[in-house]
Length: 114
Length: 115
Image (cartoon, rainbow over all chains, first blue to last red; front, side, top):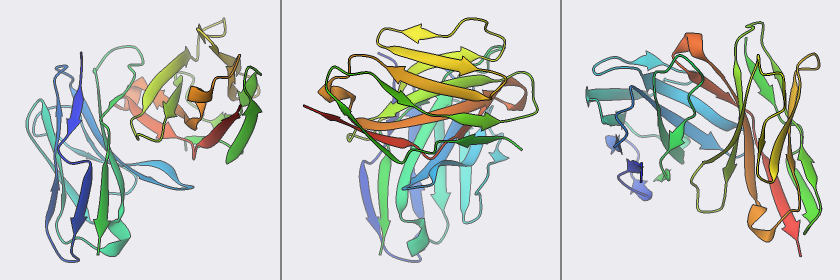
């Protein structure tokens, strides 16, 4: 069964902490994405990557960085967590196909910054 | 700019009835894909159905069908014979193959199925 795995389902951090959210996929997908989900705002793209060591900013990259050292792993980093980064974070992956490839999602990480 | 709009924050439907969830989009790109995802309370996003911009026929997947009206730029999801397990958030999304398969999502519709 194909999977996108996010390391934590729930996470509680303090303001100013450095936070790592990890995502691993076992489908050999080229594309990986980090989204943030907030009520009434839908899913907003933070960063995406279409290859190892490659990254592209999404719509809301401020306050975040990413790392993709291996094809299967895409990490989201909050350098100094703030309360306005309390949210649900969803990782997704897809093939780099010629057609429209669907996204496969992880189960999400609910991050609370206190 | 690409935009997806879902104007129904919440919907209710009686069990076994059909329901339509609205989605409109805006793009000047002629080549795009339209998707619907379901998100139950567990949080995971589940792919439901897909329609390509050049597809002539409306997509169907079991009880799900996508009412694609290209001229109106709408891609409504129709769920037939609603079940209690259909209660969830539903997201409409649009993707573009020329932008690294970037997806744009609507704000979602919360569907509640009433027994």
